[in-house]
Image (cartoon, rainbow, N blue to C red; front, side, top):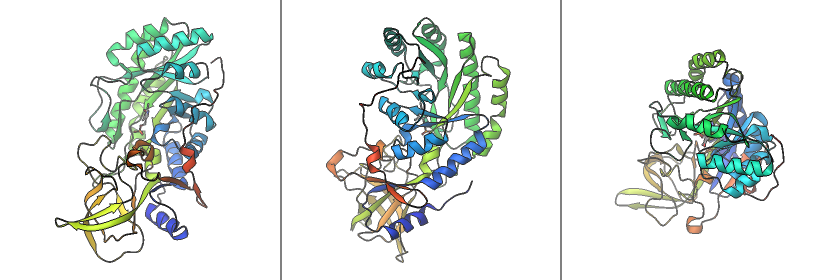
Length: 422
Ligand SMILES: *Cc1c(COP(=O)(O)O)cnc(C)c1O
């Protein structure tokens, strides 16, 4: 894959627009195109790509991604609206996530998009609403597998979970859906682990999903029309980690693809490979400015204008047990000299640290730092209201221009949905 140097891009952006306010997120639209092309080159013959909107819901990005991928996954009702706004046809949208409100299903059902059911009471509610509206709602059953290979950073299987229906309850759930006339079981969905850098573990996980999908279709006694494979492609966030070998994943899944082709209940199904972070993570950086520097008990402390209010994950607070430093760099010409820093945010709590024991070129007030790998689960995954600092902006580099896309984050919940008979 063609790669781009994110630091020189950021430096040239700040050279041209020195007044750009921080903290902000800057996304490289050209890098995004390259990653989309890479996924298409490797997986386009075998899968539709499904983008998980929650990894970066900014409308300017979702529009670009929707134009290139065949499918969007919405994790909330708002994200369904965002997918529609982005121009994605309803039949290309799935609505997943635990805890859907009745008022949301009232609006959603019949819009033509697929409902990913996560619990039996949700199945009942959806069936009731569909019947009252006189429509048939397409549903995908989300199955939570009993196991997932080692190597997945975030796991949703094995333990008690709000996600999907346990593999052991699959038969009962399929019968339950089959008995409800307002619902049409079109297929199955599994997303049980993520942030995996081990191609072998991803291959094994896809083989396991293939087996489960085969068993589900056999239990239903009907061909599946859609199968969604939660890919779990990970990113090297920390020192010593290497990029996931996506080409090795492609080679490794041949056996699963052959198994699907040989099974008449699966062969005709549309297959979607669903992911978020791998696509957008490396295309974004969070840029902050140093506001203060001092020495405390023998350690240099630099205080920045962004902490976990802007970037929860880099502060080690999004699912990590220990804080490990993210790829953080000082922008601009080398000042000469370097030092080890405690890099703190502006929040009045001692847990607000962007990095600990990080060696950086000497920092002075006004210097900018960039946290790379920040295009996924950045701003909207952070508690931006805490302590009322200014909201971070969002910018998109198109290759020619820097667009201010801050206003495209705003969530609106009052749009009308289309009507379709499915
Ligand atoms: C979050 C999510 C994903 C994407 O996970 P990544 O780690 O960003 O690739 C895919 N599918 C579903 C249902 C999700 O909720």
